[in-house]
Length: 171
Image (cartoon, rainbow, N blue to C red; front, top):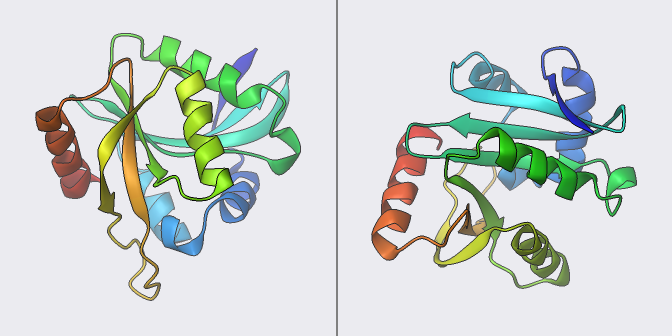
């Protein structure tokens, strides 16, 4: 069984997973992340699977869609089925909503495996990459991203509108 744990309760543990899972170019500062957690439409939660804290999810709830900004499992829980069970839980939680997430343009084996993981869990890969705006002005690394969506692939118009919303409200 999957449960979400309030991020305020276990922030230190989640921060460690966050630092391990995401490159500096993909991360917000601790201050910015804590600031987002004060917003009414942002959630940063621990993921509990079989009564063990195994990962984290950071997501935004907008009128138009739900956006998973961060999803990571502890390295010791990768391959355990926890990620798939979490997505099943999350999709059920937001069953009447479009869910989107971003993935790096699949060049490396890890990036390709990540895209395939989301595809196996019902997400659609939408072509039309973009460079992620910088979270931290001191880090100049460019991250090329694509949007994946559930329950359907996006047409060009919806994809562009989604990017516009992300650039206005998230970045």
